[in-house]
Length: 432
Ligand code: NAD
Image (cartoon, rainbow, N blue to C red; front, side, top):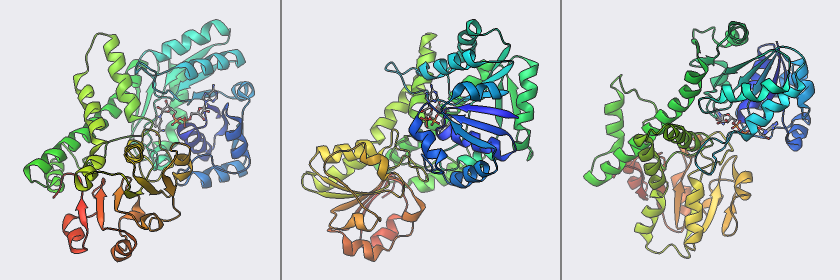
């Protein structure tokens, strides 16, 4: 099939590359000329494991191209994906300006029947809004389909190639058949393709992210109670996770969720519920707990040191999660700002996110080429992102480099017993 993907970000680029990998001809479009030039020069605008190789192979074989020309891409395509950002508006709602402006551009470029697919995360009713924008602009027939994306950054290729499920929200047979054909190579292992009405498809994406965010905040509260009553959240997590109704995944406490999706999707869901006069109480609490949790490490440091002025703090991990360079809503952001605001000096290391971080922080933040370099003369270490390379460090080397052996572990990478044995003063989440 010939496809156009509008918006070449974390979702659009992965989707485009994966669709090309299964034999489709894909044109990826972005309005950001620099991004397109970077891709056409064979470089990656983002870090995502495996993506560079996939893009290189499919470009070389002529199935994947990049352009800023939406018109031509739409005219040559049978299916057009909208994968642009839907950032949080000032009132918490999803800002649809990019989606609707792309819909208008698509309509004006149409030269025949097109399936127009919303892959961006959009509130219920957006399919109708997209259709309403397109209708007056063209005489050509079209279908609008909602096809929310469930990939995780850091494992995006795998998630796209082997999805748990594919959700297709549509109300006509022609587009259903096309979407089923397009996705059939990705569901050979038996993952279901679920065809439903557009409203349910749109809501399913928000409900999934809201549920995951709820699990995180729930476990963070359990961890906070563990600290107060002298329990160990690791034992509690294992004990409850072995109940199959609960399951083991997403039960890890930490420094709060971040990223480009959970915070804005939780907000958007509360917002569209409130537009129908429904107060989504749980999500209010989920958000409040998350905001509090993002302050935990800083509070623990203040309790330990008193005043942070003049202290040097090493930070391992800036990205909102491992295996990405994405820092949108990362818990490291409020931590770094609290530290520099309190007069501390930050020495940071992240395998991929330092370049983005440099654009976010000014003053009193140094970036180091290795995790050990960041420790030189530090009064303490804060672990904020659980990159694999932090899991088995050389503790003696760490102690030799640091001013004092104090670790604030926001990801519970080590055990309190192990750290005591190694001679560290160790603070983690929900353990003693
Ligand atoms: P992103 O910011 O990385 O990429 C969006 C891209 O769209 C940018 O490159 C931007 O330049 C481009 N764009 C904006 N307006 C455009 C226009 N008018 N014409 C052409 N290009 C335009 O965003 P993302 O993380 O890929 O997310 C995209 C959507 O997918 C969002 O709705 C998000 O909620 C959803 N989503 C994201 C993830 C994720 O893990 N990042 C997962 C699932 C769903």
